[in-house]
View 1: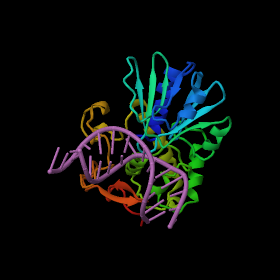
View 2: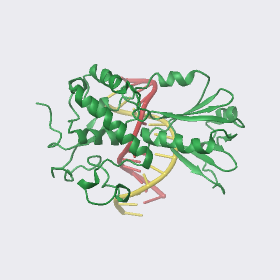
View 3: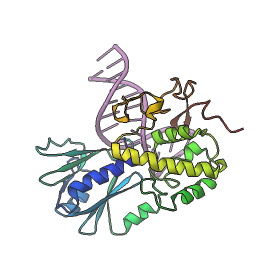
View 4: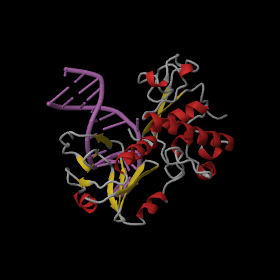
Length: 269
DNA sequence: GTGTCATGCGTAT
DNA sequence: TACGCCTGACACG
């Protein structure tokens, strides 16, 4: 379930357990055997996320770079450790903790300096919220004629948004997904950036994506909401818009589904 | 048990 | 634009 908030949360929670600790590294599945061997017995210096990427820096200068893709998953485990699944690409263990990684798109060893090459291909990350983030985001969009709904998934424009957040952010701001990115007003771009910061940081803290304002659903607190009550648009096609009752519409942009409210997010005139 | 789908993305066409 | 990759949850029988 990996949008950017998941990786930042993983970096924070794993960092608490592994930073400064010597770890055993292995790859039960075998596909990262050489990489695991290169960091086995080394000390973790830091674990950091950027966009949907996470980097483990070790005291020998090497780093492990992971991207979860659509299916990848981390599990944090404590003793007694369960038998690792044969799918485990990477296990990092101390006597007290273990992180179990399965199904990543990327799990690779990086030499010193190579982390920067990955970062150079990423736009501003709302969770990091650099001071020039809104400007960089706006500059990236200003060059693009593609729909705003597509541009939001371009990790060079903004790093960390995925398919859930894109539907939700556009809904909240009443923005039609098909408006060309460069035609979106700068004021709305700034709002998109600020909302991304707020929503991803909220998601990082809770570990799940909740965008609805509880007062628009019922009096329950966000943490008590059932799945399906936490979002405005994502995967709600045919269900009534929480704001106006119009059935939520769905379509595809670039082979990926997107959901929106035809009334609250009207097409540009 | 089998089939489908998914919060992603690189590469080929 | 289409396909391949990687895993797991869920619907269906």
